[in-house]
Amino acid sequence: MAQINNNSLFLKLALVLSLVLLISVAESVNIGFGKQDAALVCNSVHGTVSDETCSSVAQDFKLSLDDFLAINPNINCDSIFVGQWLCVDGSA
Image (cartoon, rainbow, N blue to C red; front, side, top):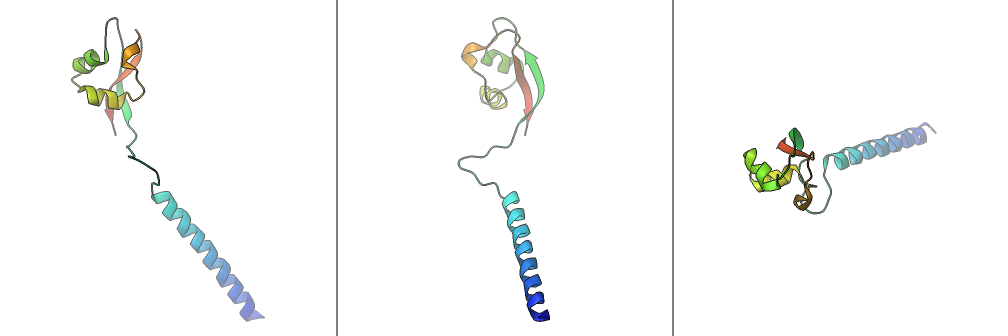
């Protein structure tokens, strides 16, 4: 009877350790499709004024248009409005 209890305990312990290992591996691996970009953090913002465009704001803050668009991923450059907050300095 003691042999059966030891085997049962060993089996339960092995199962728990396997589950912990599986969870730790799953947490450390980024599973997804396509390119996974690091989250960007906005360090400084600018409130737009009359007649500004994406290009003019990028130029004023010495950013390439690609960099400006990367730190403002949801911007619609065709409809910028006065007072809209735009990120003008970002980091990963």
